[in-house]
Length: 103
Image 1 (cartoon, one colour):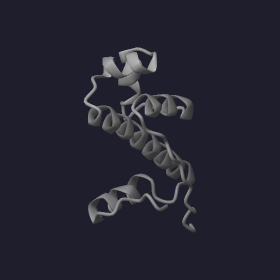
Image 2 (image 1 turned 45 degrees about the vertical axis):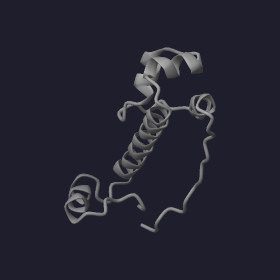
Image 3 (image 1 turned 135 degrees about the horizontal axis):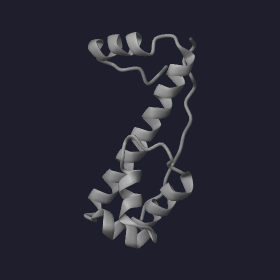
Image 4 (image 1 turned 135 degrees about the vertical axis):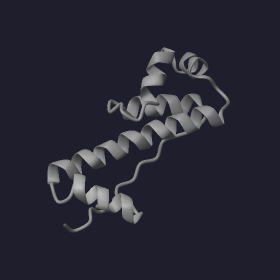
């Protein structure tokens, strides 16, 4: 997996908790995507100097939705909502796919 931790301590922990278990590897990768999406939204909002409530008003939603989307444990991000938020902040979302590492 290309997203394995880079430090020795985290790599050891990854091997202990995830290891070669394909199901756990998929869960790990999906979790990383959720964390990255939440961080991206937070970074865009704070760079624009907006509160969650102000961003919600621009997007046409509620502050609780923005709060949930910025939560690293939330896994319901949709491309449509990411695009709505990016557009409200004068940005656009770009996606890319990378090859999986050989097992």
